[in-house]
Length: 60
Image 1 (spheres, rainbow, N blue to C red):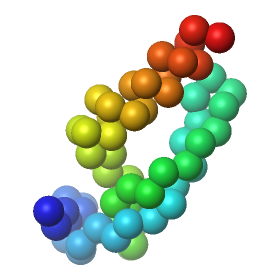
Image 2 (image 1 turned 30 degrees about the horizontal axis):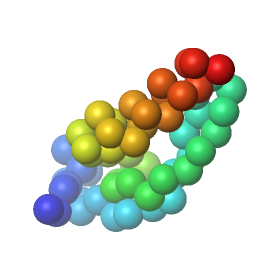
Image 3 (image 1 turned 90 degrees about the horizontal axis):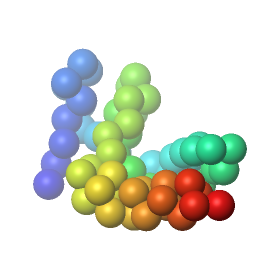
Image 4 (image 1 turned 45 degrees about the vertical axis):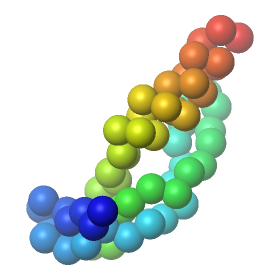
């Protein structure tokens, strides 16, 4: 599915992006606006892999 930035009205491009949580950093490729840099985190990622990582880190 093609996504567009609501602010810039340009197509989002996949980009490896760093995320930090509880002092830990990890990267994942997500859609990003090439103009303003706004990141879109798809629901599948937020509710799936990211939720798993958060849970693992909180259990430490």
